[in-house]
Amino acid sequence: MKERKRKITTITVIGLMLILAITTFTYAIWSRTHTQTGTNRNTYACFEISYAETNGDGISMENGIPQKDEEGLKNKPYEVQITNTCDTVSTYNVILNKENTSDLDDEHLKVAVDNDYKLLSQATSTDKRTIQGFSNEASYIIGTGVVGPNQTKIVQIRSWMDKDTTETDGENKSFTFKITIEAGAGVGDLKTKIFGKEYAVITETPDFSTSFPNQKTTEEEVKAKSGLYLAFDDDGTSYYFRGDVKNNYVQLGINSENKTIYTISYNIYTDSDYIQGYEYTYEEAVEDCQTDYNIYADGSSPESCIASIKEIKISEENTPSLWRIVRINGDGTIRLIKDTPMDWGSFNYNRDSDIYAGYTYNNRIACTKENPCISDYNGNSFKNSEGVGTNSDIKNKLEDWYKINLAKYDDKIALTTFCNDTSYGKDLGENEVGSGEYDFMSFGATKRNSDKNYTLSCINPNSKNDETKNYGGVYKLKIGLLTTDEMGFAGLSNSTSTYDNNNYLYHNYYWWSLSPCSYGYYGTGLEYYVDFYLANNNGFIASDSGANAANAILPVINLKSDVTVTGTGTQKDPYVVQ
Image (cartoon, rainbow, N blue to C red; front, side, top):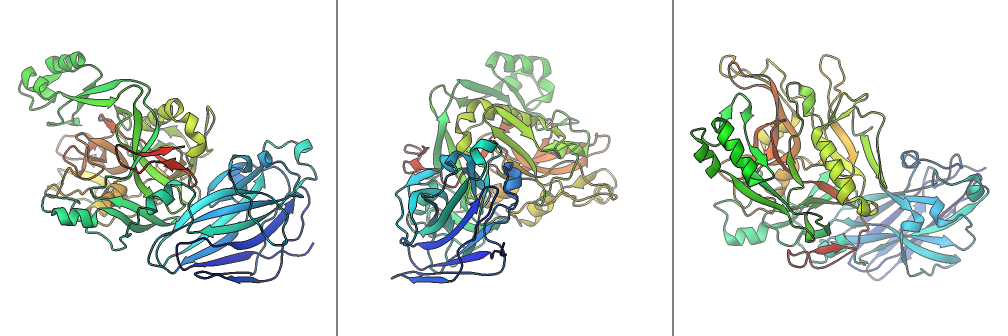
């Protein structure tokens, strides 16, 4: 068998119109065939399209047997390089064209564009493409994406035989197809809808030292600087919403119940940190005030405590469940945050050890970018990767909610990256404050918040005293929380003098982030405990919540790159996931 060469397809996008680049690869189950060789070049009115083979293998089955998804995603990819030379954002579609000689059924072939994978039978069927010299039986959209102005992106395509394929279904079967890349023509997917609004993507780095908008921002500045910005994450170019955004609403699902929370004011500092009570009925909240008024509100009387009770409507039965678009991730998936809480609760019921900063803890391996810990959903089943130890309480609560409310949309929700940065900053004994009155260990987000230097890249957990940290880190999840960095990119600030309530992430209550702040004690005689960052009811990033405090939980999910929608994205006409 001759050695196969990897192909690098280069597409230069010169305008917003349809382009077509053709390449081909074939493989046989339990046997292999040769890929196409040679160099092709096509020129169009506004596009120059060329591809040529370079060193490496084309797509092929190395072992020719069914594979688990995590194994298939490690197969050597076929890479397509796309360059946009324009000053506007361009979208692209990845089309798989199936040759009519293929005899492996679509439900047995898994295809992946970057890390977004599916059975071919689950891909969107589209008009059959006419390709010279190729007998095309059917065409499918297997992925979509965006390329920023004057940006280059490499798309990775993989395929494998699904693990559930029987020997009868797969033995001596083959599948041959060609890949076409189409840019500048949308098919109703969410990314195309977003960029179809002709946003002038802002490429400058905003001023993170102040919230946006803030009390001093003029109406003209709000209009000019609220919108879509460009940054980079671990997977490439990301486009994030910032400021007073009013057209990033998405409807996904219907609220299944009436739920109201009654909170008691977050206002007094005790040896248990800031205290916020919550109950599911007003009568229970009043009872809390009558028995424990000294730890709530100003601590003066039951009456002052009762006066601080606030009613927060979480959901109304049979109404649309609304989300807000946070960003388009570098892998093409779209990150959403729920516009109202799913519930209230703690991050971890315990807080007296640094391990409770972890989304999981007592992990058997370090959860890193190179080897993330994975939680996946398949129907009603749930599994942890072998590395994950104990789930945090908030992780359990989020995933239980997912199973009840989002399981029916699981095929539209991507398994993608979440960052729980438990890397060390300064260690215990290194923060000299108040002549020993304070002693704390800061986590990675603390310095970034202090320096106003946010990142969309995950940070690996580091080691202490040559021991691998066994909590937190980098995950692949279906549901999680926002980081404090993402809050900062969106326009929230940790400066108490610049907050404003016109940011699209503003809520009139405290809500959790995935970013721990520190572990230590913060005054003479106080216990050691884990402290977390959160967004507070004044619209800025705060660090005054112990891991066991009760705060709102706003779920975060990521839609797959090819999800289609209707609507215009406003609150009255949200993007509705189809």
